[in-house]
Image 1 (spheres, rainbow, N blue to C red):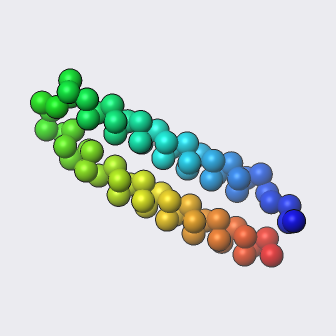
Image 2: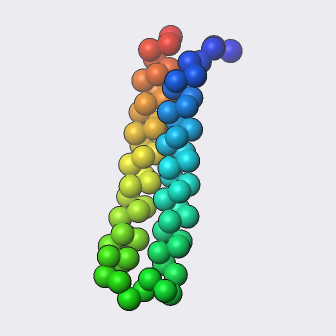
Length: 70
């Protein structure tokens, strides 16, 4: 098993934590108390695309880091 650099691991952990934060935030803004605000609908619609792009960037980053270590 190859030894991986801690920097790459921490970067991917930060991406995962930020994705989890976005999921929690999306559930909070969809509460009835925020339903009357116009920005809620647009923000809730954008969050899945942001999470998808974060996952895509994380995968590309992990592949590049693995190729660099090889």
